[in-house]
Image (tube, rainbow, N blue to C red; front, side, top):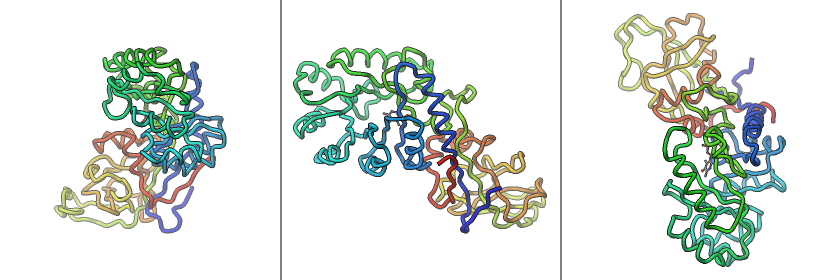
Length: 360
Ligand SMILES: *Cc1c(COP(=O)(O)O)cnc(C)c1O
């Protein structure tokens, strides 16, 4: 058993070997081209440095982050690998990209012009096929198609687009985006293509490309919601029971007494709260697992503390650990209780946890 040391209220175990296994599983699916590792948002909250280094050791040679600062933080760990910044270069940042060998993702004519004028070189082109956030919109794409000289000196490593609804295989947006992406690529000078995210890898051969870009599935989030999860679980989270008390029938627990004891109850208070990313929307919902049995969460989740009804668990005492995320309480399941998705559960995971990496 691992102990919670250093006075931490909660303990996070991240299985880097499982992340590497997930990358290999996805690589085996995507026979048309390599599979990148998306490690933005600090590796979906699990540690970009640790995750990127482990994927690199496994043979991954393409990485994506959202921001230049994120790329700078891991560049030195990934010699020779492509490291691309999805959000596009801010004006004036081009020299930093070049100095550190970071690949920009160009998603506007202005970004293309700035990259060319600053010296050109490797880049990805991001085309908008329906997300309407970033990426070349149709009008700019037409301008570029009519004037390919604007790409002079730019080596387009990949043309890419993000899928709007890949986790919903029946959503007509998928086929529409695939058609728009094919048309966009046909209008541009020939270049390799990058299409699928995690769920896109499960949409079938039509969504195969020259480079897949999974994030969530690497971290064990189910890329096929509603179906069995093909990925390995990666994260375990425990919170320490700080105190247990008897609460008489009729008494409230926590702020605003949103839960009241309907019988004489035993309440365990654990050292985790919304400041640790244990969402306040979990108040009176969901729970933990102890000895393989569910323990209901009662009352408000507060900043540092969460309370559980352990009346039916006489074996739990102060110092014990309740399992909050694990094989039987997955990030997806926690997300369903919290009214969000597994991505937000992972990227919210706090900085106060004691962290242990397996397979580093
Ligand atoms: C975050 C992101 C991905 C990874 O998506 P997942 O659903 O986590 O696999 C892929 N492509 C782009 C453009 C992204 O922003």
